[in-house]
Image (tube, rainbow, N blue to C red; front, side, top):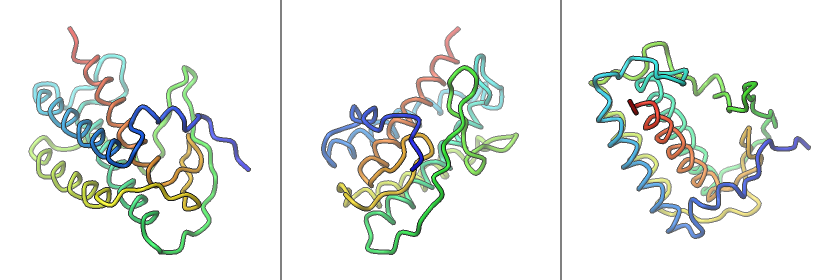
Length: 175
């Protein structure tokens, strides 16, 4: 069995109950989008201390959100779960997590003019699937850094992901 790189208990601050986790997710979605709306002037500029521009951060976060919405939907359903490879995530020499290739943004990132519509569509998908959020013991999917996560932990993870990227963007905006 592949050992995860991080302890899923680190996700606990994102909420104890499904209601708490949904509320935290909604809060993080609101805060992340509100911050993005302040970044038009440097939307395509790679940020100090970061590898990506705000446009690329937005594209990456949207890819993660949409992917997790599909996974949580599967976990909450009765559909068959197929075995997946347990490939651990990659870390940079300074300990930062490397986004899996399918979640990395393109060179240009998300177009500014597409931000609001794309965000609204993605958020609706997450909101729909998490409307019936519950723990799914015995129904898990592999996460490259946290290992096996159920639907509740995957939703905690997406809230934590939004939080971490927002905080990084806020730091990069400081003079």
